[in-house]
Length: 94
Image (cartoon, rainbow, N blue to C red; front, side, top):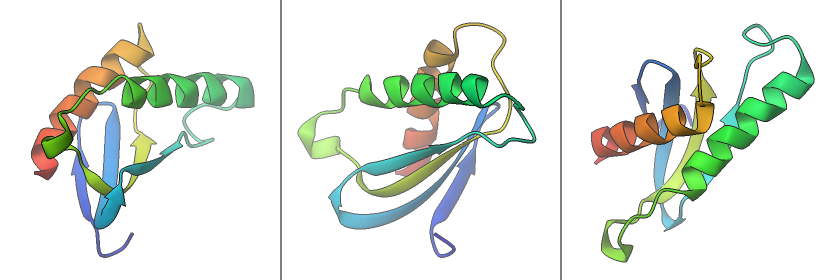
């Protein structure tokens, strides 16, 4: 991951390493940001839902490994906020 590309938005940061396989991703919610494990899991699941909802054409599909870090907890509707920011971050990666 050290050699990958890193981009940020208001709530998320992504580290991306291109490969020949379809996108594999991980979500990280630091304990310093949210103390309770159950709250971290809610945010992690919202991020995975937002990633699953990204419908990209087959020719535009991203191939590689990505780690998404939550930098700031959204005030309302985390899945919707994350979906908007993922779209923004993906456009910056290309």
